[in-house]
Image 1: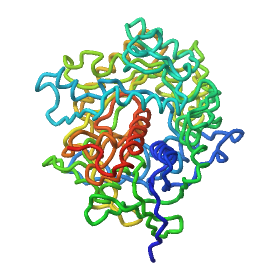
Image 2 (image 1 turned 30 degrees about the vertical axis):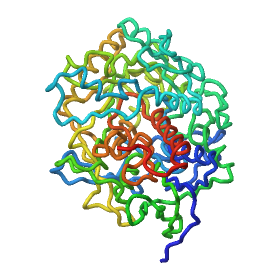
Image 3 (image 1 turned 120 degrees about the vertical axis):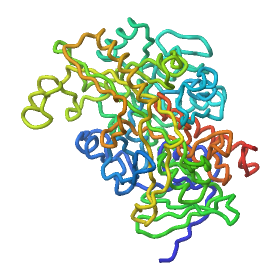
Image 4 (image 1 turned 90 degrees about the horizontal axis):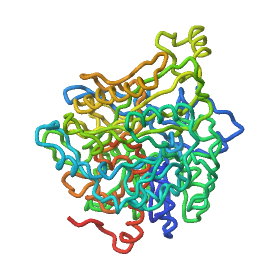
Length: 589
């Protein structure tokens, strides 16, 4: 079959989630002709908006708006002595697909990292004596300062209509917010979501123990909001269908609600769905790209020429596409040479479920980000060096949903049948959770590469993940177990259950943890240890930019979306201000 050649554009964007939609609108607003290619289908609000009912089985169990493993499998192993096996069913993580990507079904916790998270290597060198941390840990700084990135956090938060309480306004600590957050140039755009009973109980107990709780920062907007692109987002009605669901009410910031409505009206923007990009085509000198090859909905191989190529799919698939295209040298964990595939990191979670016979938490009246958290146990905010590990967690009580299938029930309750129904009738609305979302460091032998054995339906190698928990992360889990236990004791439930990783635990791919996968094509100051510079530009192929979680050198305790939005907007601004005037490397080495 002959290849179909398309008309050249200024920019081709590969993946139309948060990063892709932001890049598209920012560059289209600069007058460039932008063409986006999305592997999945279109996601229009006619599919799922009110009055159509939310369907827990379809969305939360059958993963209606996620990629299928058949479309997007990875292979997984614990170490290099093993043969990796492919994912047949999503478990620990579940990537999205289609327009909006994972930004369509996210929980909408819009949380910044701290300045210490941004400069973690600097903190480690100052705070930890040699020999305390594992020799194979590979911590890195992000290649920008807090002052450089902060305006782009704020810009993305305006785009989303962030709701919450300001804790640090230009250096002044304010009551009710996070005292550990980096200085904000402006307050939160909107006030926090309404509290629920579990939030107030958790916050009161945390304060008694000396912690500093604050409302979860949210992209489920608390008030009607019109963002800088002119898109309107409706106030949240606390329906409880957020995580794993498109918002029924147009109230959760997503590429659809915050970007696409304005972007679709621009005459210099177009997009094609069911268009799977399989390779970036390079010129003979390998220093620039001339476009991408993709497979269209009819199975045709198409070539889309472009002056600038943006890889903006999910983190795992950005890394795979770079490896398939020969952009950057693949990482070798033995020699530590190469950059593409290194510093992959995931995260762990855990917590306690508390049951109260005499309290009704009304879990059906909630938003995805409804909750309180505290940041006291994050790097630099407590004495991690004396405890012998690096990292921390946001500790929170979040009432994210009241859907019945996912309702927690006391230990011993049957998991199906009449016994399960009886347990649900007795205990629905009588439990709350205290949860952790942890950091995860990067390591020499934790990485991504192309699998030598398994291929996709196009005959191309799958991405292989080599990952397991390290002692550092398991020590952190055990420390957090004590903190959560103390808060639970203060709350005095009738009964409770706890779930934390024990020392020696292996990564369990079958149980959902999070979709906060990061690393593999990281940003940095040194082209020998990073694939991208501070503007997400490939060190090797200067007209290729790669925004996404792949750019994180390790995982921090804050949810990644705020940072993905900020670094994408910073990169787009650099393209507009500098690259278009003088195409070439934006950072000189």
